[in-house]
Length: 428
Image (cartoon, rainbow, N blue to C red):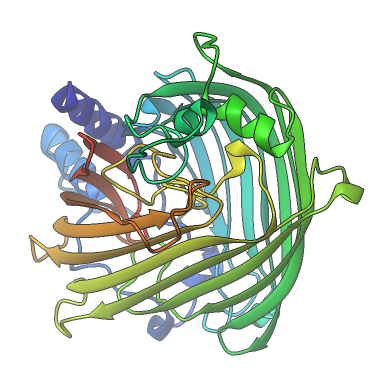
């Protein structure tokens, strides 16, 4: 099955390579030579597609290089144990709103996809930088029918004696439940640049969850138990509020960084006066550091990632609890399905070594290991119990200008958890 998925994934990617354009504004292409990165020594899927086409046509004529479009249309294909196999379409684009040497590229993306687990997901996202990075506006809109695998709360530790409800919620046997719901989400954040690389800002989030239920209609589930214990409606609720944000960024590329730092700290404040079901405060942290280990081959990289979410006050609804794969792009915790571990507070760290296989960077590889911990309602504290995972993967250069890779990873965790993870761009 996995081999079939890989072949299908690569075939669709090759087919879309002709439509995958370098996301650069025309003014950059017309700029001075010093401002134009050199990619002539690199080889990506688009180059391979062109070479195959030339070989078939035996066309040796020289073509006039046309200006590259800032918009790309490509298949939105993915696979991991949480969502199954995903297929859909994605439109991405980018442009500079100021001098490229002083302004970060502004990007947008929209996609619609369907997965074999019955998930239907549509979104519109943007990340806009004004001239000289004075302001950064980012956010997005999501409408989706979600199907989420559920293994209870906490870290799966055994319990000696407690109530039936708490036993179901803790789920030491790691019995799998499947929750289905519809979500409508909107968030927007505005950042002001204060110092080089440093931004502060605020934002708003509106999240409406409806038609919540557990497939199979079991009498008692972790979702129903937690909702009864915390006073949340088991079938629908709102989570609306405000955000205060601090961000620091010096990494050289968001898709596959060779060096630099990315840090983001967010205080999320769910507010009943804004329509939220309950008041709650959650502090989220995201820190990434990259070290290039070679001057001649800079994609020899050691990368570190930390993601955490900590309860400051109040209680979140069950579907909003932080846990495995609950980061912004659902990339944490390779080796486990999304939400396999979760709690009111959650801590995650990962280290990854990235290395080239071919000198033209068409093929490269990674090895990685991660560890995570969460608290529970039975007295297990954060940092008291840890669960590890590890794996390895192959990278195929999809777009050399944006350092976009096709990522194929295989990872192993505990409790029999393991799986193949496919996607575009690095996990972090």
